[in-house]
Amino acid sequence: MRPLIAGNWKMHGSLRESVRLAEGVREGVPGVDLLVCPTFPHLHPVAVALLGSRVAVGAQDCHAAAKGAHTGDVSAAMVRDTGATHVILGHSERRQNHGETDAAVLAKTEAALAAGLVPVLCVGETEAERLAGRAEAVVSAQLEGSIPYGFVTSGGIVAYEPVWAIGTGRTPTEAEVAAIHGTMRHALVERFGPAARTTRLLYGGSVKPGNAAGLFALEDVDGALVGGASLVPEDFLAIARAVPE
Ligand code: 13P
Image 1 (cartoon, rainbow, N blue to C red):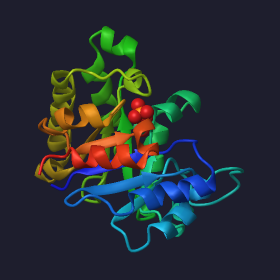
Image 2: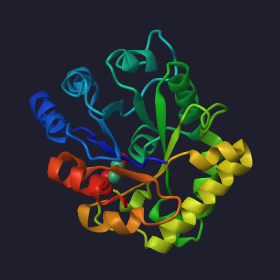
Image 3: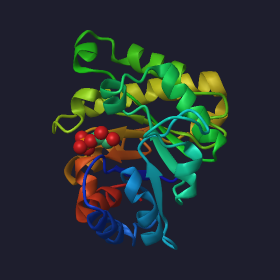
Image 4: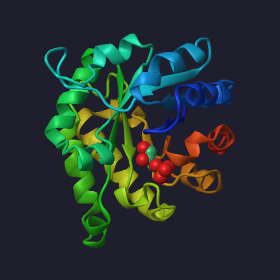
């Protein structure tokens, strides 16, 4: 399967900076799919800047409802209408800062699929959960609780992002990443059948040009969801070039 390198730009940058960043990665990397996820107000201008390129655009969240009295929220159809094709859902920063439960993430994921968006569903344990030996159980429960029917056949993507590895410069060992990705693959194939063998499983959390190749060499790691390093075009492209040919 073609690997995917996705950049989560979080709440960074002016409009001009986001468009510049998009232009900086527009050329892409042969054999690798790229996705960039700017903040809502930058979605359409970034999508315009990337027209005709192979770099896709995604949002960082959407609402579960198709429309209605939801001040400040953005529906999946509105995201789609900007030219975006993907949406990150269930990121730990949303789960922590906005109290998003698995049930809420499930509802958003269903809304994304209904609007024709490809969800990038995030799961991952906290440091306390890992130290308690519960990482695999936590991730399995999040997958079970937040992935709807139709996810696999619609090309849904899963990102494993250990909360304690995000923005910290720390990562799990390669063996730990391989173990979780193997568990996720097994759980998805059990539930959705052989089609889930082609579901892309990304790793996220302090991915840099220097550690990317080791991660991408692991079985069942089909790319990365990159935060900080995705804000520097050279670093983002260097991570994409670290994908084995
Ligand atoms: P960092 O790459 O900055 O650790 O962020 C990871 C992340 O949260 C991507 O969604």
